[in-house]
Length: 326
Image 1 (spheres, rainbow, N blue to C red):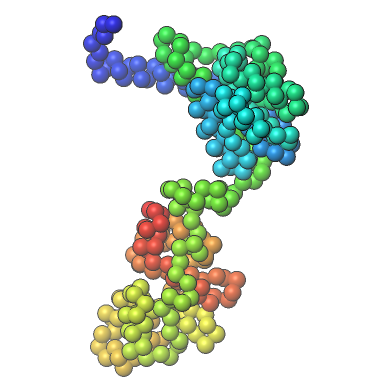
Image 2 (cartoon, rainbow, N blue to C red; image 1 turned 45 degrees about the horizontal axis):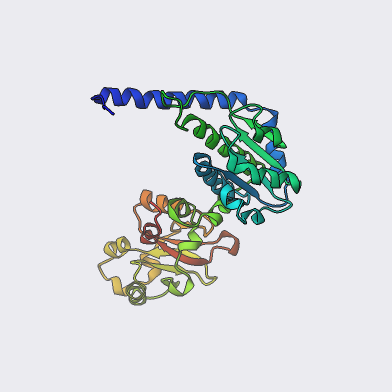
């Protein structure tokens, strides 16, 4: 096969054409959404079990992503490979589940067994295909027809636009279900504790050092005790609490420099910065990091407003950075 020489301009033209075709197809998909989409959402919401997603080839790759998105946003789901389903994995599909089966042609032979299984045992079937009247859509309880749009390649044979539309349709289902269930960032963090997303949703209470590690002294303490506590705890600061245990001040490196003359003759109350910045244990770690960066400080005492201002722990900027909050 002879390969014609191509220039960078040609590459750019081809890439932009592919993206434009897929973008136009997504607009067609948006306009095509109708009552059957709402029926699919209702069917999933009414199912006491899980969403079983299945598809072959490229549709299978898209199906795995859709199942993962559903599972991480409050809709229990997993992917079942149609070929494996025919060799025992149909046992993973049970009454109470709802199936979401993907096939651009709607005639993928490997899907025959899983389709038949859902019909035999009365398991709801949502079919997604790009061919009206196809076997998959005819057999489905809810049929989601993809718009007729050209693939991104000029030959029209490579699954590109069709898989993009299927992926977007899966995301639309997941978001509709997520918003109906009032799925919160806190719930998302529970399902997604790792990686950058998990770090962004970490709470201050997850990262802080507890009471045993807090550098704290009582009101009226001598500065000699304050310096010893700063040295022992290693945070570069010491908090000062009142008789009632509430945080009333903090002694920082800057406070020490400002009171170098006769420092050891002073009490912590005379040196401390009163009413220091604090953070709630329920605040996002990102909020704490922003507060430290904006105020040019490296530590925050963690105070729960509900317990009257008694410090619960301390958070260092390095704790946020180590956790990937940046």
